[in-house]
Length: 595
Image 1 (cartoon, rainbow, N blue to C red):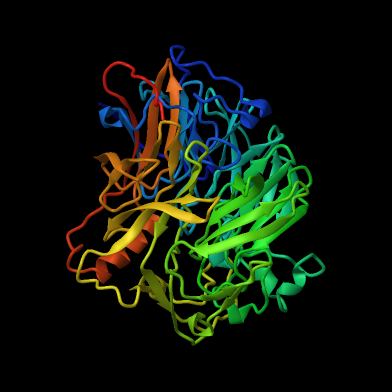
Image 2 (cartoon, rainbow, N blue to C red):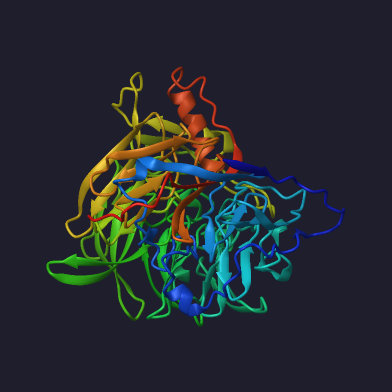
């Protein structure tokens, strides 16, 4: 296995940007322009966006690596990123060239066959900037450029062959609490991004920039203001600091030119500080890609009290219901419910069903027509009011994305069960730009984890789960349990009857039989795996790629588990070093999967 290490470079004082690119290697694969047609229908051998396709499935039709031969999967190269903390991006591959983003807003362009570095870009972030979530979830490709959203609330466009900066545009002021962690979405000549910073008292929004120039085309505020649709769901001036961040990239329907995003929770955390439904917090929203106009929305839960961001965008899936294909939006929520919504060609979103996929004790009922939940008030925390609720602050499924296989017709969910939380709010003073504006003491947040009442923590505890659901019947088909560990990684499904994921505190990266959940292959990596797996093919050889690198909320929750499950986890250590890992089959190419 080859391994190369990238070293940081000193940055001249006063520079806002540091870009370093080596001369383009003439022996490396040639770059192929990424047209809109290619994004609409990506070639199977490429992985052009974080979930592979606009519908968000996380599915590849490649099947050279399959359930029959995956035990022969071996590492073929690895590359240290030179950065620690949470590596959550997907390796993006275009015509044999891989692009990987890392914490601290770095991009590495690599020959996907060999692991040789082509160029790298390093952004000089302000040294006094507070980084609550120092991660980056991937890049976008469009035309001849690579795009990244940055921690200092800017979008940078690089020339794909050299790593040179083509343009940059800052969408907000980082000193006011704005930052970005998501992968941009490239669609119809636009680069779509959204801002984080809900815990810093910002007003969230989504921006669309011209892909060629960086000029802003439109802006949609996720916190409805006075005189806007939904503005009456915020009382007084609470909309000004309403939060509702966008942590994740959207999904897109090219046929209707509709983009779908998931939105975060309202701010501050305690619901009595912002009475009302708080639109468009904790929602799925549908926007016109050309104008940014709101087409439709569904709010999963109103006046959120539990930090249940619903930020992973719903998957666009046609589900067979009684012999009829229904155009659905599917989302496994942080609130612990599996939501199936109906998407209309006009962009309107209707409710089909919602059911718990982990233990949830907050919702007393769901309106069968609208999907609006009613709450057990004893489970709703407030200012100076403590409440115990399940699932925990980190939810039944946090940001890691589900996957869907059209071959098995199953949805795969990285779930966490049997974990609850207990918090209470405190009275807030005036907001100070760039400072925490949560209303819950930070130490209380990180010590809030509790086991589900009645669970015996003296024995190995079932927590993380890889679940498979039949959307046509609404039934769980199988589940693989992980003991004493949460699951913190997105899923990759393939036509080889496999699902791949990491996410556990034992640093394993695994492959499961997609039909029955049988563990077919696993390997322990240098660090925990929070990265989004991808797969691609070069010169007739299929590869599996994933980033390791542990940190941020996965590490924070695991620290809570170590306290809760002491002394069993006392000696557990999960290193933070980031590495790109690439795997292929050992020996000659074999038959494709026949199932």
